[in-house]
Image 1: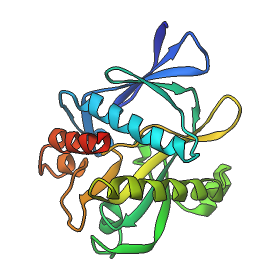
Image 2 (image 1 turned 120 degrees about the horizontal axis):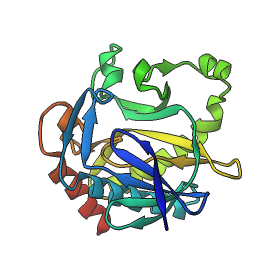
Image 3 (image 1 turned 45 degrees about the vertical axis):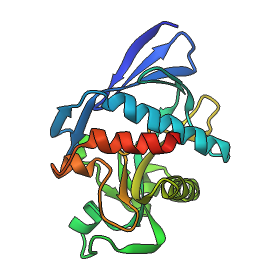
Length: 230
């Protein structure tokens, strides 16, 4: 199947194929932080994130959550339905960490009895600002359209990661409209887009190791992949 590069992102490259409804997404070995202001190339990182995302997408599909995932093409390319990405980043928080602590008086590690769903504009040039529901409405988006699915995904991810020994602190997801106008889960779900703490601790197994220069993400990500494969 022929392919042509159409999007070259920070950590993924998207290619068209001879089928107009299918794209190939290649996971690169780069890791970035601060909207690309810090960057490094780490061998095998793309393959590991691609495999983790593939496993999780397959698990979500089995419980009825529609995603763009079709198949994995070894070693770091994913075959996906072509979607028009909605320019929103949806963040679900179960435990306080990261920006919510920096930007508020909420201490790190606070368990939210009700998960918090946030929306950010997907725009690196504006530093992905937090959106209010009223701002979303003025932009033409209904927050409720995303919240139900985001919380459903959260319930499944909590179980998936708890079963392999991790607390799901928070995660970022994106959605897109497929060729039939259905809103489906897109992008990726991996330790690049989730915060994962070893159960009952604050020991990181996610991109915070790179953000804080506090450990090896390749060994951490590999551990998660191996546990998911069991």
